[in-house]
Image (cartoon, rainbow, N blue to C red):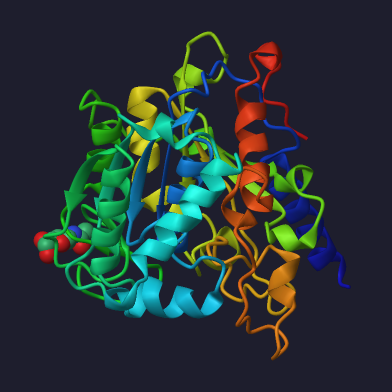
Length: 357
Ligand SMILES: *[C@@H]1O[C@H](CO)[C@@H](O)[C@H](O)[C@H]1NC(C)=O
């Protein structure tokens, strides 16, 4: 290796490390009232974690998703009934799955969902997760007593929607962020926070931190990336002010492994967060070609993190259910993400500065 290259190489490593928090800071956050959001597989994950932890999570913004438990642990339903063929969905079987999780106390009691809020967005021109999936979600959450704002009239393809960044509104493709002249980040969070959010502030670049996500999983089955990200508004950094927590879940092919920090910086949530003292956690998945079967780095909404999903006749394509555990409080990804949330909200560590190495 040439000397100049070596120097460059070392300098790069140092710079990268300088921005990585080895530990999440303990901030002044009340976890009751946490909100979540996500697109596509992240939309499904948002619904899942909302229902699993409804005693803490009081709002979800679900963009291009469908009903919680839609797949019932079958990969085959992920691509059919829960994406391209929602007209075939066996709604009764989905309802029974949630009932069972509730009776077995694998999720927080669903009575916590009464009065919670969800924002549901289905793009008129979405050809990946057809809009009817959103309507099924609306029906499910209505039965559970959740208050809803639905947005079905924007001619959007499969994407997170912005007012000015990304591809044209009806384009389908990477980074799956489309400009439909609509500020989805603000509109959705403002609904979840009772219409009281301020608009118009810009995020501060240096308030975005990469953190070591490896502290939060012990098994490769979790399919999480080595790093996650957290946006800490200026007013929340010293732990004096009580702040709120929002967790956003990227879609498939949108993790930092694929897009760098583009998604995190451009969807607009950090702007809303800076203006309203909301800490935003961006957990990250990793791509995994076979074990587990997650080649696009999706969040787990069909059970790929369960060992059962390996017991498939054709190797990895699973024609049997992986079970329902991936929807529960004990699901690998939900447990990992909630541990991050708990660490961010551990006031006892509030005196610790943002430790950097
Ligand atoms: C976003 O879309 C609108 C409507 O098509 C267009 O007028 C505007 O210039 C676009 N913004 C950017 C930054 O591309």
